[in-house]
Image 1 (cartoon, helix red, strand yellow):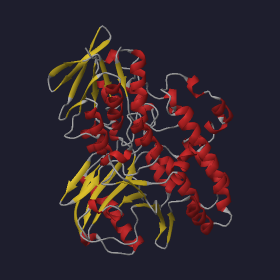
Image 2 (cartoon, rainbow, N blue to C red):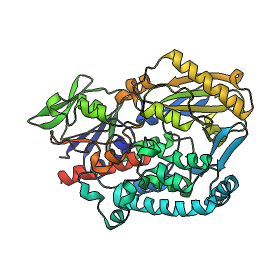
Image 3 (cartoon, helix red, strand yellow):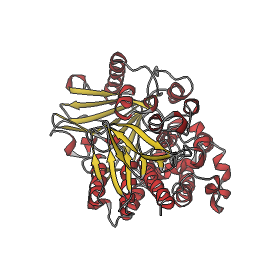
Image 4 (cartoon, rainbow, N blue to C red):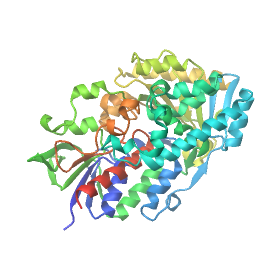
Amino acid sequence: MNRKAIVIGSGFSSLAASCYLAKSGFEVTIFEKNNSTGGRARQLKKDGFTFDMGPTWYWMPDVFERFFADFNKKPSDYYSLMKLDPAYQVYFDKDKSITIGDTLEKIYEAFENEEKGSSKKLKKFIQKAQKNYEIAITDLVYRPGVSPLELITPETIKNLNQFFSSIKAMVRKEFKNQHLVQILEFPVLFLGAKPSATPSFYNFMNYADFGLGTWHPNKGMYSIVQAMTLLAISLGVKIETKANVQKIKVQDKEATGILVNNNFIQADIVLSGADYHHTETLLDRKYRNYSEAYWKRKTFAPSSLLFYVGFNKKLKNVSHHTLFFDVDFDAHAAAIYDEPKWPEQPLFYASFPSKSDPSFAPEGQESGTFLIPLAPGLEDTEELREEYFKTIITRLEKITDQEIRNNILFKESYCVNDFIKDYNSYNGNAYGLANTLTQTAFLRPKLKSKKVRNLYFTGQLTVPGPGVPPSLISGKLVADLINKHHQ
């Protein structure tokens, strides 16, 4: 008889782990508290408009290819990809923006136009970033974070100094132009920490950005969720939605199953891809790996205030991905990490996927998603949400030289309280645990429980870290660990 594995949650890491476990012979059932699979990567549909509620950037396509190849599939078996040109646009003022193209040559030219001689520096910078990317993919991110020895390879020893310097120091040593600095520091925001707190080794994200490019899956990021869900079902995975897990049952220090919707479901393995902190609240205190004090000490990636907006016309002077860096970057970062509070002048990001993909909005109209990064745990009220919406729309109108507030058909907002309610997210964080030096690899929360046999964890709060590609990798790592322990 096949061994039974229960998976809590259906985000990217849970779906990935489920596929690997089913492939290795486990009888797998996913229990998801919401109405659909995908976790934070759900989709909102309203009045003919579509919105990716969570991730909107498709980076590191090689990780997706590697995942599907493990099942003799390819992404193109499920969804088509378009390389975006421009990849994104960054506004610094009404009359000042820089466009990042779809090739390194175009990006070198954009840098050179901004500052003479910067393209040569960028070429060297990207060569280093590519080398770090290859080391990360080959030697680091596919390691389970069990031991510090995982970090010790001939390549990492050669690059040890990069773990003790910061992205900020590395970038600013070479580049003086503030606009170029901000563009080069932007990708590490995906890792959930300030550039000054992120080891310089993580400049491999600049290669992911400039070297590998920014892609868009047809019909959005939810296409990946649908693809992975179809793959899981084809491998025999069962999926139960509207299934709220209330308790992880433990007997003689061994996980025996879960209590879900007041019913006990037995299992040989319990794996949680839900929020790590929340998962441990499903255990009696004596079985938890980490105390409340532990979680309070950790540096969490930001939360977000999001708006999903339907416009009754096409917007001008914006790209599919548009960043608004027209205010003080450091002041906003301080409001997230140093003295958590609502930022006085927020940077924000806007996605207009209907610029590239007509499925996102009715003809002649525009679908817009707006995101303001915030410190987790802030007070979240309708009044604050409305105030910040007015702020960013006013700035968008001014910077892009158009009137749009009277063209808004509707807006839906999503913030700290929603992350807590829908995802049991610790303090309403959006991206998990930041990748700082003291929260890298084996220093992150463990994939395997130290106190309960047959209990495992996956997702953004464990290895390798925040983001969609790392979540896919996390699912593979935990499935490999389970198979190693249960051969």
